[in-house]
Length: 475
Ligand SMILES: Cc1cc2nc3c(=O)[nH]c(=O)nc-3n(C[C@H](O)[C@H](O)[C@H](O)COP(=O)(O)OP(=O)(O)OC[C@H]3O[C@@H](n4cnc5c(N)ncnc54)[C@H](O)[C@@H]3O)c2cc1C
Image (tube, rainbow, N blue to C red; front, side, top):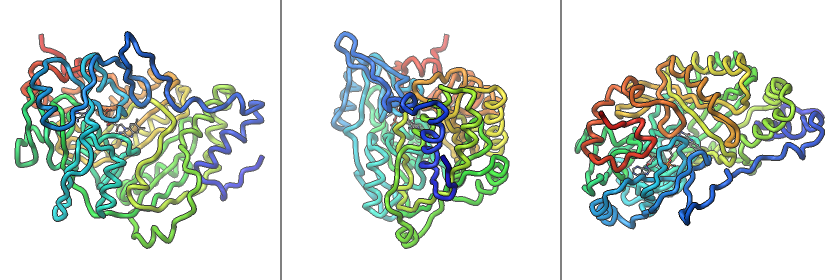
């Protein structure tokens, strides 16, 4: 089988490489079929329905499930009960932020835009609104989010709870675009906060890991709607590293995907374009599958023939041509990730990002770590939010993944020792092994956050097992 370089896109080429090119080597593709897209669900216990997160690595059996209809009902519930409560958004966190065996609280009924200030371009949004729905509503009103994460299935409150971010050093995380929010405390008290009202609560609550109270609405800074061109190109590794520092400063958004065991890297840039340019460059909708599925196929090939790993990972990228996509901001941002995986992400100081990324890729090769899942590399601007990974420090966020049904612990631990050498701060919603001592050293405002947390939640209603290691009881 021959592969014509120029005709292939990054998705189709890798698919060809994954299924066809290596079919001969393994005899048949039948033994290399895709793994199930959905993690197999856990069973009910004693009549209690299980809850699990997106990747299936967090499971719990909440005794109660609450879905308040409005802020008054929520406040009443908090006033009249005393047990533990964990809010859940879209369940897209990999870390144990959500699990509880007491009350799980969904804010899914707090949805949609309740107010638009056309002059200041601020919108007030229900905490449970999914980013995809918010994107559509903003677009209808000729408005746009300033930046967006990799997918748009998260809830707004869940996203800001962990400083969820996209890429572009000129942009902050979603939390940094919050200009006000309303929080209901453990005792049922409603507090509004912004840069001019309850400023300490505002600085803590914009990245709160669900530990301060329940957020009912969020006001966000947005902008006029816009159009984007996405361009991706696979380059030889050294050439890619040379280009990256220049792209970091020159491009609106820029990210890279490093391929383990390969001598190539995928660079993706996003540039703002006019509506006319976007309209003129629309191509017939082609394949919109999940590129990660292709890597799953490759992983199956490598499982069958592990000695082929280097060859597979070095031939497949060479088949990939330049790919361009144009469209409205809410269509270009927001990939579809059907293929389930687990993830760890650390943010290191932006100026150390490339050295750390290089060390990650070199270590995987040198230690022959059994992984082929691409490593994502992004830049994020600094902010002043107490527990944000980007607090007073522009960051390079480096994410390592493995498929949901593959072991990740040893791989992630090895990567974590590298991130630690660069004073990396873990993404709150992704896997890490940090405890309170580590956070106290990483976050200058740690003690202030802890003190405020104790004041707002003296009886530790919002603390589950995962948060107990982060905010242990003293003595
Ligand atoms: C496929 C995938 C892609 C991802 N891409 C990115 C990315 O590009 N960039 C990035 O930074 N992260 C990314 N993430 C991580 C994800 O954005 C975060 O983990 C985010 O917090 C998940 O939002 P959620 O709505 O699912 O919240 P959940 O995971 O359900 O909850 C997260 C936290 O928010 C709290 N919470 C939820 N609602 C409320 C509320 N109303 N009041 C108070 N606390 C609340 C919860 O208690 C919990 O502590 C990705 C995750 C997945 C699975």
